[in-house]
Image 1: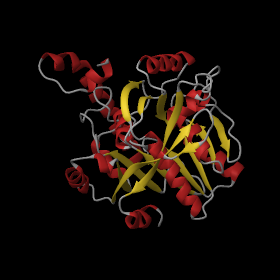
Image 2: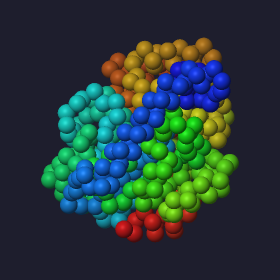
Image 3: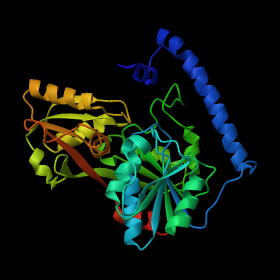
Length: 361
């Protein structure tokens, strides 16, 4: 167990004594968050607006709720309804620090995952006709989309905490498997805000609703906020061959021994998806969320696969956008080992409710 996992786990006695400094920091962090929210609520800190509809997709925990596939899904759905859509992302973990960066102009991809972060590049690859920008100041990013691409609807990826940017609709994602973690704020836990701030949302979307055994209890807890609650799941769609770019049907993985790896917020959910597809999961490797892969990582994976007699290595599409960009990484160089990415999409358990709530504003 690494230090973060230990810190966020539950304990008693002496363990809590060691954790106390982090608990104290959580109290301080919570006080700062509440004071900041109060300043915005009173209008002392102003919110910035742009001349188009703005929809935010976010969460109150650190990573792993499925913001990226949900943003992709919503962009596709709004585009089908005739909207000119643009996306603004913060570009978590990016190395390029320009204030505003055009990741995609809706035709060409201009940046790498290393430069701007894995999530914006993944979205750009999936949404080839939608402009995507990265900006720490979301207002500047939105303004660029308006001025240069004439959009009429902007999606803020991971925008729930960026309250200085006014939004017309606030979608909050909550992971059914681990909705509130250990209920502690950062750094003692992985809540980014107090649970009470769920009330700022206009709509709650429970993700991975099909994997939770306590869905009714979670729904009852969320009823307290009096908000519309939608239930969704992530559905595996295809296998992407990283050496050829060809999409293969999912039944190819059934009964096949594989090595699976990822660097995402909820690796357990990914591994379970593979098992549910019938894959024989021989070995797994978990990297830190948003891990910057090196060629040495791939060589190590190939070596481990060879040792246990496996010729299929499978990862997430989010990880794939980073490893495909590695210089010197030739996925056809090792004929005994093939790399694939699992492509997933979003499905709502009640499509009629989804239509009425998400697309009727």
